[in-house]
Amino acid sequence: MAATNTRAQNVVVYSNQFLTPLDTPSIATWCQLDFGVDPVNDLWAGTGSGTSSGQFENTNTVETILITGPADVYDDPSGIGGDYSIGMLNTGFGDKLGLLIDTEGLPFVNVAMDLSAINTTCGGPFPMDTAVFLLELLDAPGGIFVLSSGTVLDADTLTGTGPDADSFVFNWAHAEGSLDVSGSTDGMVALRMTLIRSSYASFDNIYIEASVDSVISSVHEDEAHALGAFPIPCADLLTLTGMRTRPRMVTIFSTMGEAMRMVPIAAQGTVDVSGLPPGAYVVRVEEGDQVRTVRFIRE
Image (cartoon, rainbow, N blue to C red; front, top):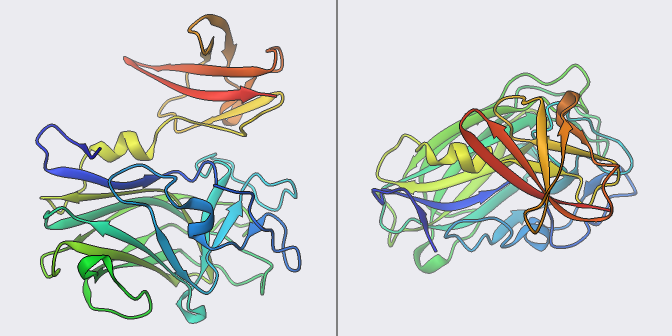
């Protein structure tokens, strides 16, 4: 079902926080741990929400980064990236990622995502710079397109912020852009992403809408910053992401709705769940007059 606002002028075609892949990533053990080299579609096809099928194409290797992987290669102090993000080399290496979109007759495609320069030892470490992604809309009549070529209908760039002093630490920035669909043959287009600045960079929490307006709607605030939790399953500590404020306490419920306990939130959004027996639970977070929940599993 299409996710729309009440005026039906914006359609959420794709949204993904890349929380849980379809399979365990194949690790590039020959050059770096915590670095999955499977095609993006193998791990993430259909895992997001929205009207798009969520089918990806990529050239060369576009990687899945295990941010909280067992080798502890990366650090994400903000928690914005959760457990996984998508990483790619810059245009000089030929990495491209494409996603097919049905715009449903609406004239604009608006995109929001978090992006960060980040390093890799596969061929690197590389010199880092502010991450800049080029977004291009390719005409895809009948849902057919060629990622490496095709007619470009419109383009925009998303720019992050400078890299962290430690190039293996994420420094996320939120960016938004808009593309004009008016030249498409039948409303079917492909969004092509290319890194054009920084040797390597990553993106996460992507939100794509088709719209009557070139300004992204407020709907994406709830989509792109949904309450998240990792790791799942967890042992003793659970980290909450996507909180707009930092409440002092959260309430943990059983999946049957029984309040189990109130737990304080420590630094970096960490919650101690070591006192809970193994099983599935729901965390309830109150931020002002808004209540949000997220499910987790205690090992």
